Amino acid sequence: MRFTLSASLALALTTAACARETTADTTEADAGAASAVSTAAAQETAPAPQWDLPADAWRTADQEDLLYIETDHGMVIVEMAPEFAPNHVARMRTLAQERFYDFLVWHRVIDGFMAQGGGARSNPGHAADVDGLQAEFTVRRSGEPVVTELQDRMINPRSLPQMAKAGFWDGFPAGTQTAALAAITGDGQVQSWLLHCTGAAAAARTGDPNSARSQFYITRGNPEHLNAQYTSWGRVRVGQEAVDAIAVGSAMDDPDFRPDNIRSMRTGDELPAGEQVTIEVADTDSAAFAAYLDTLRDPSGNLPDICDITVPTRIIE
Image 1: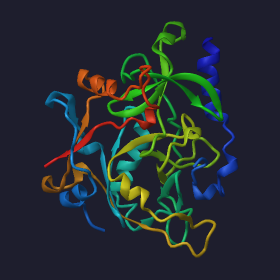
Image 2: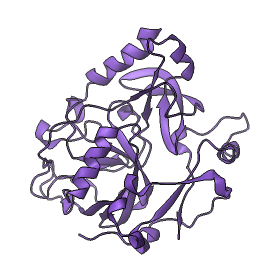
Image 3: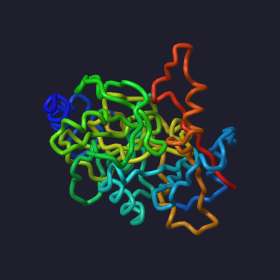
Image 4: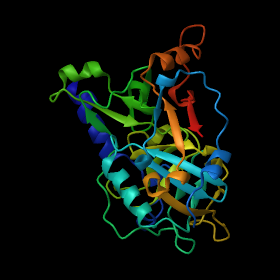
């Protein structure tokens, strides 16, 4: 059993057949798949808070973990998850702070799937002059980060059709091997991964699992075949409607496609205090969140699929 769940997962992560959807390696394309922000601009993209949760059932996102991405359709704010993908998060921070993404484009956008950014208008394969990153598809854990186990869910229907668990970590939809498996693994640890639910931010790559450089994508659907095969490093907290409005097309395939712009990208801790947006996310380990989940259960007591559960999020003025 130890080999079946642990070794075979690792094997699948490095041998997935991803060439079926990639373009040339130099595009860094996903195989599955300029001004600073103002508080007012971000608030225009966010729904008014309607969540009836007590004050102690919220956590405040750290500004250093927020990416403010200004698009042609409004502001998108992504919360990064260094606990799951520290090297990819560090790369995104560095490139944003170097202004690498300013004036680049969303060069490959597929409706219901994802919006890929980081290409240049004249070169969809544009990438930073940096080395490819080692894959961070999963994280091995014994305790932290704690991932709740709310429902059974297949790891990946294409490349690893084995059942695992799904739940939340800090408001991020996540998959995990069951904690009970830790008792029989060699190191007492299990593997966990962030899910590609709508709004996931992840690293584009070629068929080489360790080829991610600078291009990234944000999902516009729930592409389960990317789970544990691509490094998911964050999640949209504000502005998914702007992501969904990005022009559909592929600069690699259609010379007449006019891609939308990444006007700018900034980390929250770069911004003056007056331009930072305070985002609160429901504490998904709290009793109040558990009670909220109970309101979503069907008559048989089953929850919706984890990707269909909205994690309460709000902007504090």
